[in-house]
Image (cartoon, rainbow, N blue to C red; front, side, top):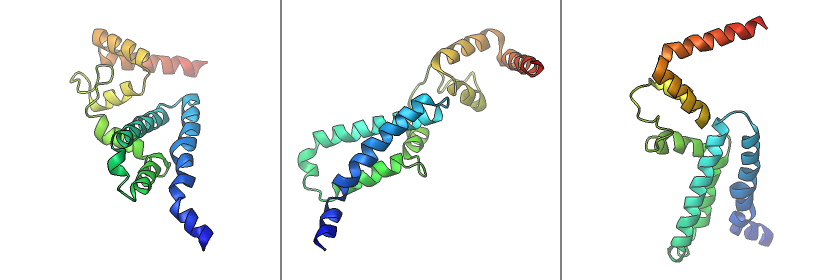
Length: 157
């Protein structure tokens, strides 16, 4: 019983580094190597939130020392942020942060529909800048025609 009690008492110290650091580091490296930007969003958001948690802990350590379950609350929250079945960091970004962050001059722009904004947000910053300049000059329909022409040309080869 003594070993189980020690493990239960120090579960945060045993599991925490793996959940809060090792797996996110591994997943972040995989995200950098993948062509999708969705996983980049998940892991960048995770690291931002984790940094805020760490700053909060450093600032309020005297108060948090009096809360016996703080380490477990932090562990559960970080598990929710990290685990693939939840993607909590991506959820927080999509539902809270994205509303207040202006990305490349697009968020809140009335020139584009919601679907057009989604397409533009999937692009790299440089590509988005070039596409928005093209769209501002020629219109969204011209961009769609150019894409269809490129697809048609690609099918020939």
